[in-house]
Image (cartoon, rainbow, N blue to C red):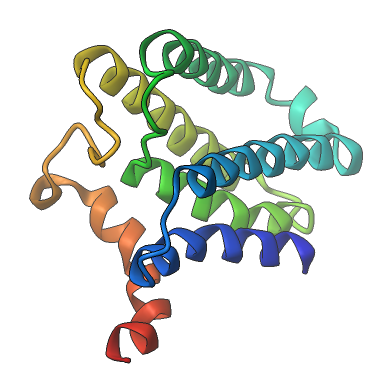
Length: 171
């Protein structure tokens, strides 16, 4: 329950703050820090409860963590003076990850979900790395390397937010 509460609050805090016009640089930095802490704790959670998820999938996790490490290095060296980019692919990965992560502990055959997590995450990290390399100016408003009309991540990642925020938008 705590995990889902953290995931939902992480998903809604940005749109609500933009809707209420209460965005700040500090809020963005705290959101980024909270995302990182929750993300890292989730891996500890997996290791403590079902360590075979790591040991049986070393290659897949190695590729995922390599993409993550490259993205972190690119962020530090190429984008450190700018705000964090929130891409549609990253939102899609985080949403899928936080929603389905607790489910894999109850499945005997968890590999399909796990590989979807890892593929979505690797793609999100690769896309962020490309954005850091390709765009030297502040690109915090950039949501993808694709335009919204050609981006399947845009529709999938924003659909739950549209449904959840419908009462706020109508108000």
